[in-house]
Amino acid sequence: MGLFDRLRGDDGPRVAFIGIDGVPYSLVADNPEVFENLTEIAENGAGGAIESIVPPESSACWPSLTTGVNPGKTGVYGFQDRETGTYDTYVPMGRDVQATRIWDRVTDADRSASVFNVPVTFPPQRNVDRMVSGFLSPGVKKASNPSDVADYLDEQGYRIDVNAKLGHKEDKSEFIDDAHRTLEKRYEAFDHYLTGDDWDLFFGVFMTTDRVNHFLFEDYQRDGEHKEEFLDFYRQVDDYIGKLRDAAPDDVTFVIASDHGFTTLDYEVHLNQWLEDEGWLSFESDEHDSLGDIDHDTRAYAFVPGRFYLNLEGREPDGSVPQEDYHEVRDELKAAIESLEGPDGQPVVERVVEKEDAFAGAHDEIAPDLVAIPNHGFDLKAGFRGSEEIFEKGPRNGMHSFENATLVTDEPRVSIDEANLFDLTPTMLDLMEIDFDATEFDGGSLVRG
Image (cartoon, one colour):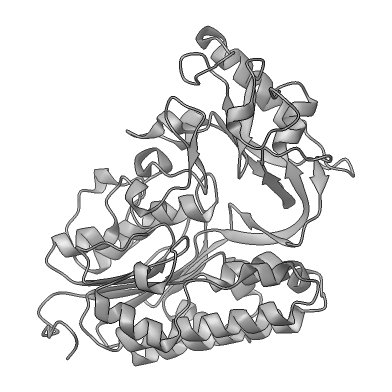
């Protein structure tokens, strides 16, 4: 009957969530012969494209997806965030997420949860029946709780992540093989614990999909050398999802979703180099590699992906922009960003979102003042080590997109029209018949009828 010897049938409906990080819905819709299982699930249940969040970066997206609230409430805005009142930065981890996760709501309702490989969850929580942290975890043993899970996964050869460095090589064969091995071990672990039948919420994420997209998406979109290998990888992803669904108990609703979309990358845009060239950003010396090296003449700086901060008096330690000039200077910067053109004269940015239109909550004091959403083809970078060129091409040929994330479920009562990432947590709680206060979320349940 399973690890916790729970009797099924008396505790309400159950949900199995399978995350497919960075998979655009158009990839599924345009290739039904590759995604036979997802296509069948969507046709008999519901499926479509949904919007991600601002900014569409995994470290910000997964906390929002798993809480139903914006980064102003989760406190996580990206892979790197800024300490309040300093120029110090840090990499957000699980304990930096300030909003209530869906699995905490499940356990608070005296239901059980198994959580696997969700980004930004390290260290694993002790109040969840079993958890294996995902992206940014130092290793399987430290990422797993309880200890018997760690022992099983370590023996099995489970992997937290693919070796992305292999994708930087011109020859992609090692990377592709590594991606398949990582995917296989993830599936084996999911199958082992999902069929254990001792959970009410099963929440597992395939992150290798994001990695494959970063290095092979152009091959897919533009008929490149590795297009068939890209599609073969996704045939395997779809096959594993189908097998998991077939193996699950009959009372389980499946929800499959991604945290953002994807598109081809043509140019990496070094925003801090652009800000320096345009006179917005200056450094104390030529030897600089961090935010702490900016000087008092700086008016603005940037973090990935496309997050812009004014160097504001009273907020930044050495702020140069007076509080009374905030809106005027921000409008000036916004206009400059909107006018930025690529090497061929094409606009780099699709739109620029102001802080108050994207973020609200108790943790919005470190929110960016502006967030640029790029046009397809431009990936907005923001390192502090000097770059000679604003526009460059690196080893990656795929990038995140705000639109075109995926949502597929075998529950036909779900309506996906105008849905976004914030809707997923209240939808799953609704499917599990767990009571919640709708005002606590920035989204709402998609269950109709």
